[in-house]
Length: 226
Image 1 (spheres, rainbow, N blue to C red):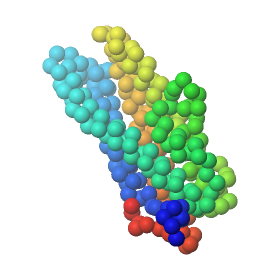
Image 2 (image 1 turned 120 degrees about the vertical axis):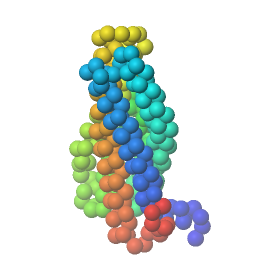
Image 3 (image 1 turned 90 degrees about the horizontal axis):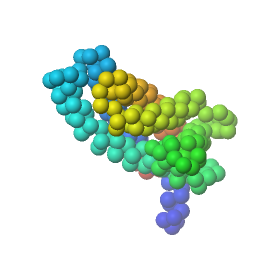
Image 4 (image 1 turned 90 degrees about the vertical axis):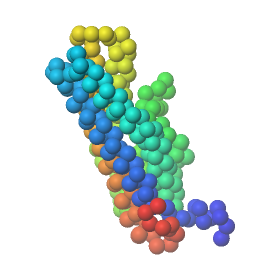
C-alpha cells in the first residue's frame, strides 16, 4: 500500500492537540478574569489614582506578558486541531467540502470586508460537529445551540473591542476613560464565556471522533493521545 493510501486511511486521534489547546484557552480565561477584576477596581475607584494607578499599570503589563504568547499559541493550536479533526472526517469516508480546512484559519477574524468571514468559520464548525457524531442518524441533524452562542459571543467581543480601542485612543480622563474600562470588562466577560464554549466544542468533537473510530475497525489508527 502506497503512502498516499496510508495517509487517507489512517485515523489520527486529536487528543494531544485538544489537551494543549484547552490548556491554552484556560490560561487565557484566567487572564481575562484577572483583567476583569482590575477593570472593576478602576470603575469603583479602588485603582486608577496616584500610586494605585502605577499598580494597575504594572499588573496590566504583567498580564499582557502572559496574554500575548498565549493568544499567539491559540492562533496556531486551534486551527491545527481543526485541521486534524477535519482530516479525520475524510478517513471516515464523509463527503468533505474543501473549504472547511481553509476556513479553519479564519476563526480569529470574525469581522472583515467580506461577509463570508462572519459565518463561514461557524458553518465549518457546525459541519465538523455533525459529521463527527458517532450516530449516523445525528450527522444530518441540527448542531447544538452552544455553537451559535460561541460564535455570537466571539463576534460580539470582537466588535466591542474594536469600539473600545477606537475610543481608548482619544480618551484621557473622566467618563470617557471609565466607559472604555467598562467596555473592556464586557469584552472580558464575553471572551470568558466564548472560550468556555470553545473548550466544550474541542472536547465534544475529539471524544465523538474517538468513539466513531472504534465503530469502524477497518480504519488504521496511530498511537492514541497524539
